[in-house]
Length: 307
Image (cartoon, rainbow, N blue to C red; front, side):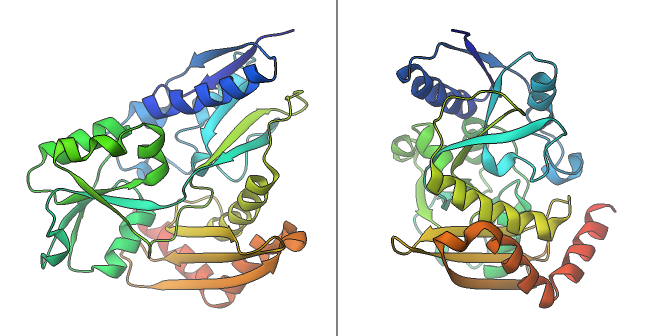
């Protein structure tokens, strides 16, 4: 039986995710080996993510490795995977979803009592949501893997907090260490997650015979959220949130939002749908947002980013 070569970024979190998939495959009797690859997004930590190009700055190097047959599959945080893949590649499994929540990691227990805060994030979405809620605050750019971003938060005395994905800190086994570092955290329950946040996605060449490790519920979440993103963004990086959650055995709820970069404008949508009808719901919800002016907002975002 052929050993499955698993391509992965080299950050501790990415390696954890790749090892997670390796363990699932090995439990099913398949031999695996990890192939760490440096991504463009990891190599350049000086520029904001959105200024590095369109989408895929964390996935392009792994896409090339797949197309050149250097690896068989690539494991990603699905939120980093563009909604349109290079020709010849396909998303073939959605094995797990952890928490989709964003959290604020902060230094002082009275951070929410301060009139003005300095908050760090490299995400346009998180920046826009935070500015919408706290327009007086200052947002500073923050890049790097989870461990590096935490250390930067500690080192910059003037920073009050930084925004992370709960799943990233949890999977990296860092949550329990925050108190030892003099840090606190709180889930930001009013911030709509990035589409597919918390979901692991596996990409391979079309036709690759992948052992079945797919979670159909995760696939449904990802399909609706990524479809919403695809219809709205048109290939650009934009502050867009989308989250599907199960309400019952037969129904789900959807929350979506698109914001201007400064967070002043926001279009939101909340809907309930039957799970059996999920296939085109993301497109339907995106078109409702377009009817409210989301296309005009996207155009302005593209112009602002290209300056």
